Amino acid sequence: MKLPVHDSNGAAQGELEVKFPLVEKDKGAQAVHDYIVAYNAAQRQGNACTKTMGEVAGTGKKPWRQKGTGRARAGSFASPLWRGGGVTFGPKPRDYRKQVTKTVRALALRKAMTERLSAGDVIVVDDLKLTTHRTKEFLALRARLKIEGTSLFVTLGVDRNLLAGSGNVQGVDVTTSDILNTYDVLKPDKLVFTRSAFEAVDQRIIAAKS
Image 1: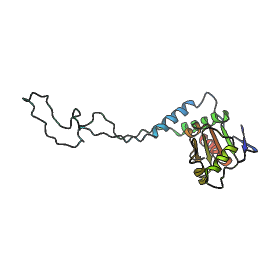
Image 2: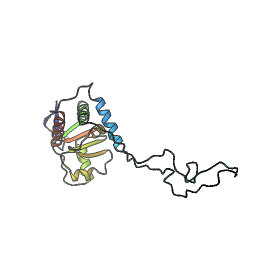
Image 3: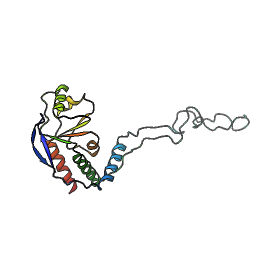
Image 4: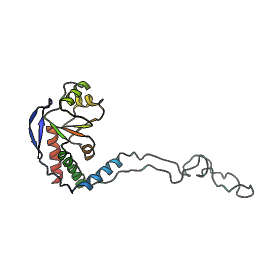
């Protein structure tokens, strides 16, 4: 499969060959599902915490004697039945992360990239360098490339001007080729790669498959 390459003005600059093997239609869907579930689970902080009956502050004295008062028996001011008492089966800090094997992660990324390539949602630009960090310059670049909707710009390394210029634009994210993941690939309407970034991702997928 070959992708057209454009310069920052939208003019054609040849083609780029996709070297990693594309995933067949009936393969990889479960891997993508498992990765996305694990990714979303890892975003949870898991720091909700309630106090049990043994952790709330207060005296251990019995509220009143066991018999003869006419009231229901009570053993502690910390009882969950009382205001200010402990919480029964309340949440405690926990780790929500799920384990996903390297093989599943690699297949999920390859499947996601295959789907986006097949749908024509991947744009490769020879270079995305901005001369300034102004939002106006970034918007002009996006207009020349005819990019609409949400988009993810992928560069080989951190581009400070691109990060700053796109920071105030809603629906635009920027990442680098070494940390691009399946969730990043599936989330936006369009993926915009620099040539070097796409080649790096291509090699990542090949290396993970082998």
